Amino acid sequence: MLGAEFFHRWMIACGSAVDREADRLTELDSAIGDADHGINMRRGFAAVTDALEKEPPATPGGVLMLAGRQLISTVGGASGPLYGTLLRRAGKALGDAGEVTREQLAEALNAGVAAVAQLGGAAAGDKTMLDALLPAAEALGESFTAAREAAEAGALATVPLLARKGRASYLGERSVGHEDPGAASSSLLIAALAEVAG
Image (tube, rainbow, N blue to C red; front, side, top):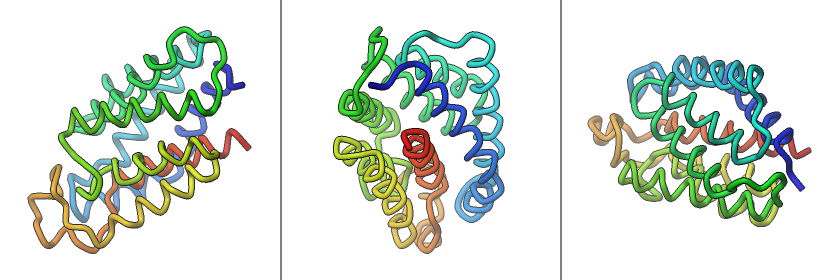
């Protein structure tokens, strides 16, 4: 069973991964976006880490809700609302339970991913964060490792795609040949989850 402490460690691991890979995320974003994805995500997860240390929630859902609120209030552009929605909706789906199973987390993550799709109006193959999150949420029902592998494969699969949503879509054919930065950061979050799960 996964308690609040597990989710706390997951969010801290997300912050470490984003901090470590911020330059790469910004480099990816410089090719097809605003060149600020890594900077924004680093700022957002630093705020998540601070908030969790000051007032650690007692439930898994509480941890995700708090993290989502911090991302919405501190991450600029579209990423803040999208990642915030992902975590808040997943946290809401977990409710007040003190511990949850991996399968319950998979269901909650699927609910969060569906909310992101609704908010952004995107679908699989549009070259967005959903290309990593959709297969990862699905695979999480199988195992943490399968989720990580699905997210990594999904992010890499965005390279040959033509962007149909977000700022990259303005580039048309020039968006082809670049990994989507949102899919890359989503993959980091899922990898952090698998790392914490051991």
